[in-house]
Length: 366
Figure (cartoon, rainbow, N blue to C red):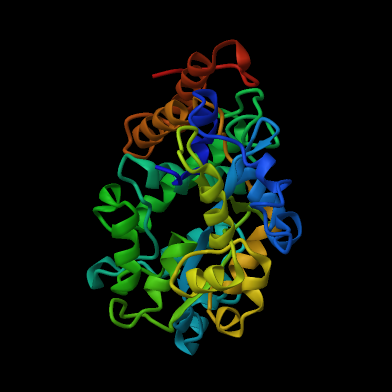
């Protein structure tokens, strides 16, 4: 293979094993690099660096930049009867939630089990969907996994911080306003619940939004509003995620592979990719009137300056597996948040060894 596409959090392991090659030399080689392509000016640089760089080297270009959006039924918010009833009950106007307290109130208000309609869901099945969704909660409470600024950096383990414990307890509270089988939900089930109109709101990836707007598969096309995730700190944030193009070390045609990467980042290709349902990180894509008109474009653009990265260090996959397991134990009622996150802190310390320290004392474990 001459080109691969991988989730960016796996980059550190590939670099450590010597399986991918940096592209820095190609960027300065006029025989392969198009001088008209200036990635530091033409891409959203903070996302490009997090998705495609490691240890001071640049290894590729972003295939797609993804973030999580809050998706809600805007037609329900616009309904005068709902507005009157909500204000009488909660003494505030009915509008998209800015905090998790407001989110919970909306979830409660729109939950009607007798009508098989629910305020929200959690993607509670053990796996990546649960982990990614839960990350939104801890980021929104000011928490993190490691105390580091970039995915390629190490830092103290802060997974059992007071902020993360509060966020995890808040996450579990949403189960009461979710479908009965919410602990079996993953990406597909969550998307379907919104498409079929059986929930009021939920969190979905930005590249799932086009499927909510397609009337061929969605009963709620044109009825969904999009916004950033609620924040309990008062500071807006977004989850920075994506996939990146890389050139394997064993590529027999690395120069041609690099030319392909630059072609893939070209204006036409990026515009078409965006219009077909992906998320471009080329700035000029968002000058296209057809892209501007998409109902979720403004929320995606709002996410760019405040993207929060996640570990891309070599043990990232093992860390993720541990987090998936411990968070599921918490949301499934097998462990309280404090004990579950304390156990997770010890898991991460064991995985990362002497590269990290625990910031917060472990109080209880399961």
